[in-house]
Image (cartoon, rainbow, N blue to C red; front, side, top):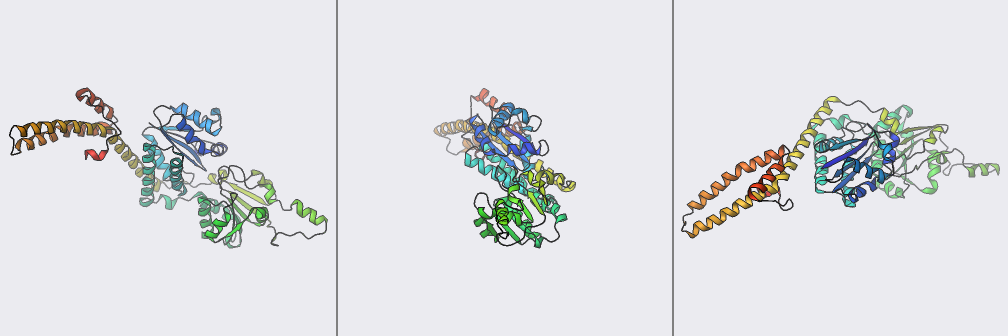
Length: 433
């Protein structure tokens, strides 16, 4: 059975989503240790979802494991999540991957996040065949939505939306001194979007020490630990998008006058920034991190404005209904196809077992006919034709029952009538083609 526990911007507070996203890598292994056949966790800036395949863990057990792995009391989760099970799981994930459940309908970043969730689960060894197929089909559905509908062309990413909100404060993007904090996939998207708007004076800092490599690859300036605070003070636009679990930018980084500079001034020494560039009079800080990359206290500093995800999502545009309806139709069709293929797979071992049994009897009778002198092959031809006719109806009926979720009835009938108990691990659908 497939199960999804989801907390998103539609059900949970920003503060709870932030807490859930601090250590998502612990959840899937803990679920598997608790008895799940497989688990994949999708944690983004606006959602936390655990996809689980399990016949032994019920919803309460899954929630208990999530609470244990994240360190969040179950009581704090009450009312902040939805549980999706069985046939609804595929359509939900396909919609998520296509951007239909995002803050900004049609945003493109989520597709990569879904793929990375599966990759991460593979590295941890927590996937299962059913979850592999589910997530692979989700990516296929997303690509079809992208290619067939106008959803992603109409939608805007959170990066684009945040920079559009910044437009009212920025007269000339080319004149901005930009500091990008982070070097991951989101940072690359942010950098490309900044350049589209005309920004040219861009530096990058990495709390994990990857600034130099990222800067060389993208043709911008790296910032090292010793210069981070000084560059932050001189930047007019700061954008953070790291995976750090604690804030990487706080009031101490943006103070206009450092303790050392005060001491120098008292001693009669001139006070200047490392490259003699003046401090800016106003700064805009955009925090795209989840959990927060920026200490909210910086908003209390004079001349500093903070734009975080909680504020950004309040300005998300309304969905374009036509594009959304077309996308949801594709998602629904893809989910139905996913279940149809999956249903066929449930009866495939039984169909293979039945055919193997019938054709085994057939070969034995053909051999006896040959021993009796049937040299012209007419008896063999007739018997093979009869076997095909006899198998046609049970095979067709098996697939019809599977499509209705009644494949178990076919398997029970096989055991009752023929004493056949098929091994699900030995047959594939290609064997009945």
